[in-house]
Amino acid sequence: MNVINKLFVFLFSITLLTNLSSCKDDEVEPKPQIIQALELNCETVPEDSTLTLVDLGLEVDYVLNCIGKVRGDLIIEPGVTVQFGTDAGIKVSETGSIQVLGTAQDPVVFTGEDLIPGSWKGIFIDSKDVKNKIEYATVEYAGGGYFNSNGDLGGVIVYSNTLLNMNNTTISHSKAYGFNASYGGDELVLKDNTITNCNVPMLVLPNYVDGMDGGTYTGNKTDAIYVANGFTTIDATWRNLGVPYHILARLVVSAGGGKLTINPGVVMEFGLNGSLEVAEGASGSKPSLIAVGTAQNPILFTGIDKVEGAWKGIWFDTPSALNEIGFVTIEYASNSDQSGAIYMWYGTILNVHDVLFKDIKECAIHQYVSSAGDSSNLTTSNLSFENVGSTTICQN
Image (tube, rainbow, N blue to C red; front, side, top):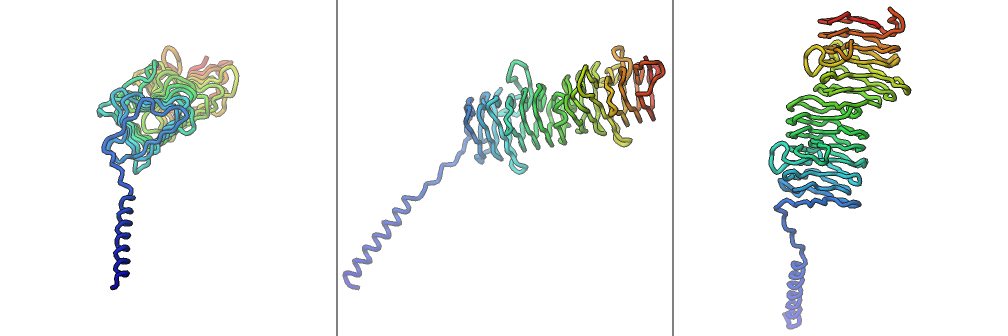
């Protein structure tokens, strides 16, 4: 090899080594692994901003040791776990929204630092944003403190005029209610949720029951859906959710409310002196009650306390021809405040069939009529009576 060729080979080798060294220097160094959860600050999401929490691949991805104020949009992606310190929680305000976007394979988990019921407050939502959604999530060990002076407790608490779609979510080990929606004006869709190991699974207003479908509500200290005193002002269907509805005081189907349909198998248990009232009021549409079970799956109206006179009964003041009670058992109704388990004011139209009246203190049916003996507005068939204290059907 001549001198020129040797020089060329030498220079080429030097150039190649230099380039290889340069390429190695240009390589992107790997990012350091996150080995500790990130702590969220109390001003979690300012107004007009968005915070997205992603799965960091840790057992706990984020911690929050205060009330995290959400005034903007909070998005939580699949697989995220958020851990809350004592009395911490999330509060979504009117300008904010929350999207919890878990999946069946990668749910989102909200849990307490201490795995004790009530160790953190929960999730409080006061927002009518259409984006509000909680799906495929677990909320556990919450319900331990108030977010406001009203004293509302729950794993998930919905304030007035809030919109929320919650589905396929598990709420467990809440010290109080699993889900609490006891204010008016909300638009709720609650589907296929599980609430277990809580004091009581749910407290809701009557209007919100129509938005509930499917789910499991057993394994709690009290297995019942608590329905607060109030009115149903929409066409509504109450479904058999596998546990009783506890009507704590009055449930009123009011003028403008259309009809209340109660599906087969539903159990409604009424508190002391509680009642179901279907009343047209001074004006407006004529509300109606359609409570029709089946021979195999009857409806039960009863008292929370299984004693005579435990609740008033069903009170009608509406001329709707849709009113019907069939394949039903009514028990422990009628007392000194209402003289019939079914009480019909003047002009009420009602079809009662295949009904068992049991342990009734006064009359089974008390009908007010314009003239004695007129029962044209009342149709009855296949009625049974056990331990009815007075005349089975009374008139005034």
